[in-house]
Length: 169
Ligand SMILES: [Cu+2]
Image (cartoon, rainbow, N blue to C red):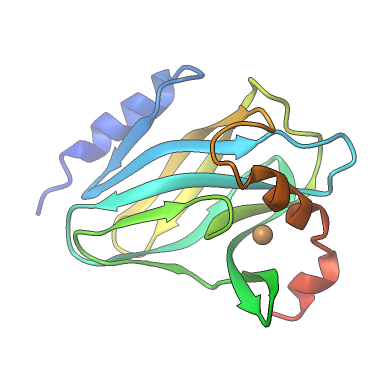
């Protein structure tokens, strides 16, 4: 299948304002990339987005950004009654599926923030897919109270995120 939407996606990324927010990359649609604003001392933050795959199966292999020293793909797992974050090597995107990276679930982890993520700001995040290639999207930073009701608890979990957690994987 021809990737006719690729150029359109690039143009969209180049002209994007602070609030716009869908990107097309081949058969993939990337919806509303956003991150939660972080407290001044927070060592890490999370970025979230939804990936709609209208084609054959694909995988999100990696994410990169300049706002932190390390960028990882994470999920949350429950061990007993403790919810922890764990690094994942990639994220499966089945054909015809919609995959949400959202607070409390899969997310892009920004570890070692170089500066706090401020509400109203935005930053580029490059996503690399196994089949569809790469795209750079603009992530909008939203306030601490934005989106889901589970935010308070999730923000606390991110605060507990120690560098040691990542060395185990
Ligand atoms: Cu995480």
